[in-house]
Image 1 (tube, one colour):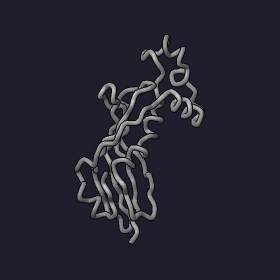
Image 2 (cartoon, one colour; image 1 turned 180 degrees about the vertical axis):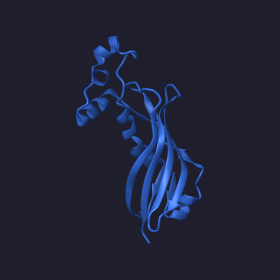
Image 3 (tube, one colour; image 1 turned 135 degrees about the vertical axis):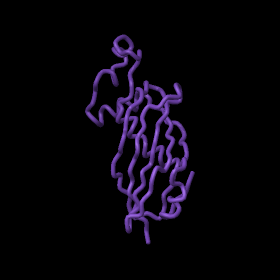
Image 4 (cartoon, helix red, strand yellow; image 1 turned 90 degrees about the vertical axis):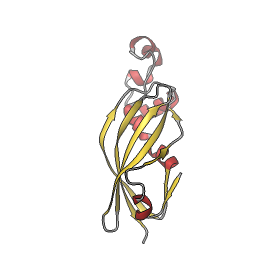
Length: 153
């Protein structure tokens, strides 16, 4: 895990791979809890019996946004940013879903620092990320996450 405490610490990794996380499993229980939290109970996510016969995957699949939502958990396994007053999740560019994640499959996160800017008191980072399905080796989601860090003086 990388420990970052300043703009200079971050800047040395521009254009480089930051690291890869451990895997997290997207169980049916986790999918169901996400459905409850988001009010998205589409059958392809929560109806295991119907999915067996009517889904092209033969099982339920995780919500795309559930897949995305585990990014902060996995990011924390790669980089520990310290000496920060606050962090703003500024947005995500060029995000696309590559393939569905079947219930029970696991994902990990690989990141690289695409760019970094010192904005007079704030540090804007663009982190290229991809989440890969352990069981297939294929990318489930990829994009560029933009974070703004306010380091302590």
